[in-house]
Image (cartoon, rainbow, N blue to C red; front, side, top):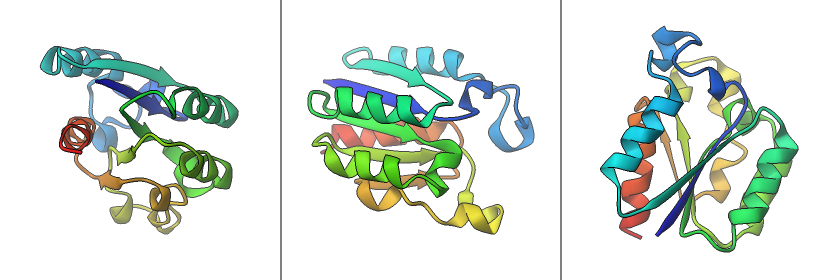
Length: 139
């Protein structure tokens, strides 16, 4: 089974950026923990701060992978193009947010991308990625 994790803008700063909100563990460390936990899976990871690159990655893997876990960061709340890209592919997508978007600023309460996803996990910290993988395994 092949799972693609896609992280959007500013998530390259996990572990450094606002640790009170996002924690102190960097994603490069966390992805290795996930790969060790799920050694039977092929877990690929992609991060970009550029909207078009995220769309290109969705198009690239969205017809051949078994599942996608996406944290589109701020694009969650603004990108019709990312929402359309998710709707256009066959692979099931789970949206993840490290923080609880509903406990934050009001503009974060709207997810344009979530309606095109199989499910949305928000507020479970980095463990949301593991929960998303578990959901995909049960599909």
